[in-house]
View 1 (spheres, rainbow over the protein chains, first blue to last red):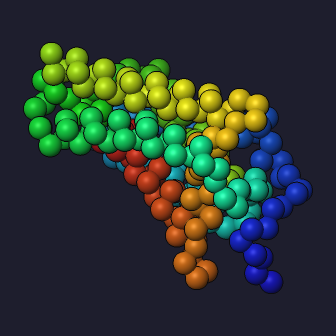
View 2 (view 1 turned 180 degrees about the vertical axis):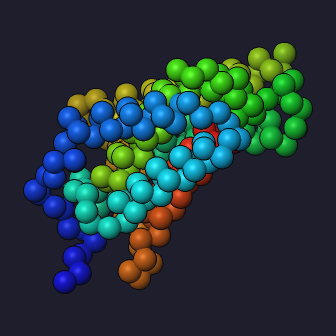
Length: 135
Length: 70
């Protein structure tokens, strides 16, 4: 029988516990951090891990935290950092001035060449993704 | 000069994300956390299609691919 979308599953599975999920995410991040940009491996690893997480997030296999039915008025504060980022990203992208007026991606690229920073970024990306799946 | 402006702008933006999240986590705050905002957006459905979940997952997937694979 099909389950309703808002169903919150109470019984935690073994692999859903932090003691299991965190080491798995760390291992996936360490592997991902070894692959340089533009490599086939990096593309496959990104598409593979993201694809599995999306698959988990679109079915009811992972317990979800209850979502709010409405947002409080203070939610408007989130537009402030978003607008500042979009303004600078848009301006740097349209200007296309290279390193003279770089986009966020262009600034991040040299940092992501370091394997440790790259693995840490992988961990942040996967952890946030896992958090979204559980929402 | 323009490079410093861009770096400063992005740093201000990141700092604002952190400040708003910090404010949202205070006791009795009327500001939802970023996770709550995402969860609210992900509730959006058109018919039985979870458009909000697909959109948020798709955006996050693209972001990872953009920074980590290319």
